[in-house]
Structures are given as structure tokens and as C-alpha cells.
Length: 161
Image (cartoon, rainbow, N blue to C red; front, side):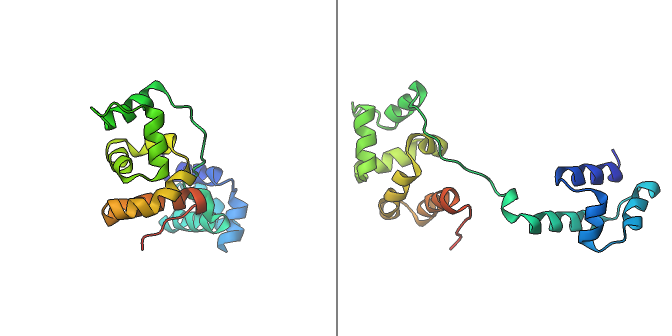
């Protein structure tokens, strides 16, 4: 596949035709159409296309996270039980204590349960309420990770401060 085909596919991906690209990039349409006849597309055309697509809709390229209610599967229950191995707690009791912010339950839960599964088990509001507890229990990096996860769900952006 040559560069012209890549450029055509990129235009199609961004729901744009050559005429629109020419207008938005201030390049004469004959020049843009000539790239196909010549069989080559300059590098700057790809950069311009990316810039145009991003400025049209900057949020389009961000990861879209949508909170979903997930039924606690047997595998998730088992993972929570394993996090509290030897303690003989019921899963419902563990989750109730984690939601309350009990550090004795929050620490092993967040240390031993995979973060993707934590997002399946706890709603974002619950994680958001736990942020102060997480900041006191864990290192700055872990607390910042969870703060950024909440920000991604809430605002669609990251905070690196």
C-alpha cells in the first residue's frame, strides 16, 4: 500500500474528502488532487490532516470511558476473597468496609485486586470518596493514579500535578 492510499484512507477515517482538506489546509485543490496522479503525498499533508482533525474535535481522540453497572461475577468475588486470604470475610462485608473507607480493608483491596477489576466492582463515586483515604495509605504515585482515573471518568482529562 502506497502513501496515496494511506492518505485516502486517513481522509476517509476523518470523514473528509480532498476538497474539504484543500479548503481547510489552504492548499489549492489541484495540488491535492495532483498527489494521486503523481503517486506521492508529502509528509506535511499527513501532519496537516492530523492537525485539522484534532482542531475540529479535540475530544474525539480521547479515550471514552463510561461507567457501567457490573454484576459481581464469581471470578470477581474470588479475586476479592483472595485479596483477604485467611481472614474468612464475606465479599459483601469486605466491599461494605472498603466503601466506608476502613484503611484495614482499603489497603489490601487496592493492593491485591487488579485495577481494572476495581473499576468493575466499585463505582467511580465510591472511588472518589476514597481518594483522601488512598492519599493517606499509599505513596503519592498510587493516589495520583486513582485521582487521574477519577478525572478521566469525570472530566475526560488527566492531571499530572
